[in-house]
Image (cartoon, rainbow, N blue to C red; front, side, top):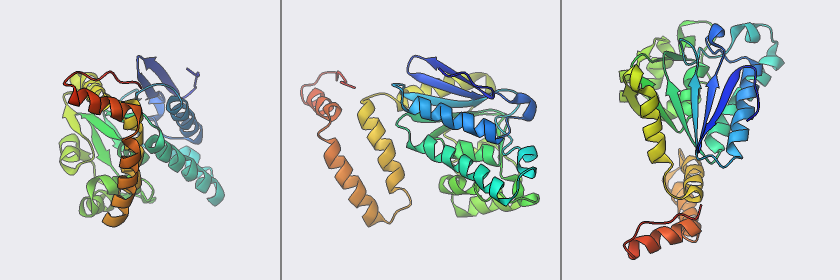
Length: 257
């Protein structure tokens, strides 16, 4: 795997773990840090890995954008920074692998955006989530985009307008994360959920993830039009053929991919 300055990347079997490694800066997202994350997700996405874990080193998951970087930029520079951040979020959704956030400590602003942009998220009981711009001077406009699609309008408004931190239990209740576990069980819980989410045909899973994102937030008729055509095409994949044959023959499938 490529060597980076601000992140650590490790491959273990079918899983790539990308760890934000700016603990002294609370894993804040400078342009260089974002660029490395984007490169690492591109690299993982073109590999034969089945899953990607996004984690953070140090006391928090991520404090969001690095204000030292933002404050030094003019309008064009901030627009470029936010475009880079948006590219990262879109890449996490578009790669064929299942992406899961391993969240401990605080995930605020663009850090919360990272969690919401992952396919799945497991949080430690110590985790907290916030869009703090609501009580500051720079409102969390872009972080609110994926968060809104996870928790709904009223809860988004509370999170974004108050800027207050919600605890892990509230994040679970609101739909921002899939699981909350004691801190010492976090790694095991991430591995368990990822193992269940990556079993089966890789090609089928990849097509399924892409199609789920394509039909989300579309009118029902449009969503059905997309899903129908993809599901029909997917029936001809080797994995689908093997899965149906195994069911009909009452045996365990032998996945070709």
